[in-house]
Amino acid sequence: MNPKFAEFLAGCRDEAPLQLGVMPFGMLYGIGALAAGLPAWIAQLASAVVFAGAAQLVIVQMLAAGAGALPIGLTAGLLNLRHMLYSVSMAEHLRHLPRRWRLLLAYLLTDEAYAVAILRYRATPPPEGAGAGSPDLRHWYFLGCGFTLWLTWQLSTAAGLLFGASVPAGWDIDFAVPLTFIALLTLLMRERAGQAAALVAALAALALATLPYKLGLVAAILLGLFAGVWATRLGRERGR
Image 1 (cartoon, one colour):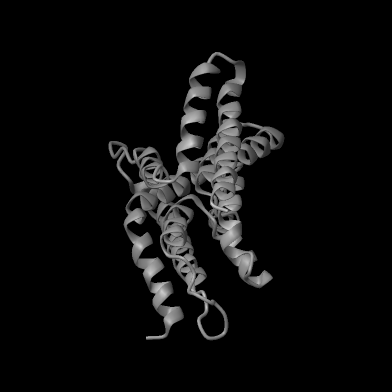
Image 2: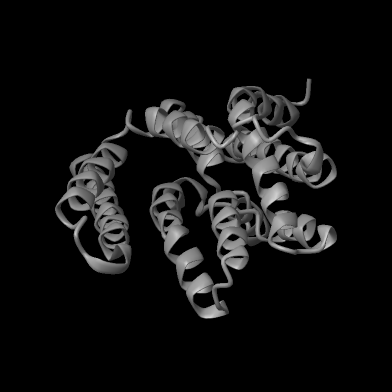
């Protein structure tokens, strides 16, 4: 088998178990988009272009509540700040790639894809003397992770748009959202940066819970991000 294709398939295989939580997550978005009055084609296009599960759910919920463009944009931006930590963590592994590869993988850099791919990068060092004779193919693994998640998200969004109206009201599938993030937290807590970010964010959320307009949660996100970045840089300096 072609080594690149083998890496790609390995990424697809390792990412597959997380899709059990992603599928109802995507259906919730599709159902919520219709309830908010979005045309089905726009909702599906957003899943393909934006490709940001939690942010998409929040956006349709805020649209349904009649929120304006500015608060929706600010909320979605704050939710996606965590990708700064993902980018810092992945940068050292991807900087050698051509720009076209970095742009593609940046588009696919989501919670679930990062959680699986970063473990592979850290557990499997690049080949000795990586170059023309012994290339580093781990980005194909990352591509497999991201593609699996992207395809599942598109299909589950379509399922929510097509069959959402027929889902019985008694079927509580909201559990998918916290379940997915609990699974991701379990994976990311293996790394020091993830542990630092989770600890600081949890303490900050408790300490600042009384702030108005849920600003305590926003501050906890930012503090957790800074803690994760600091832990990543500190670990890199100690490894020199």
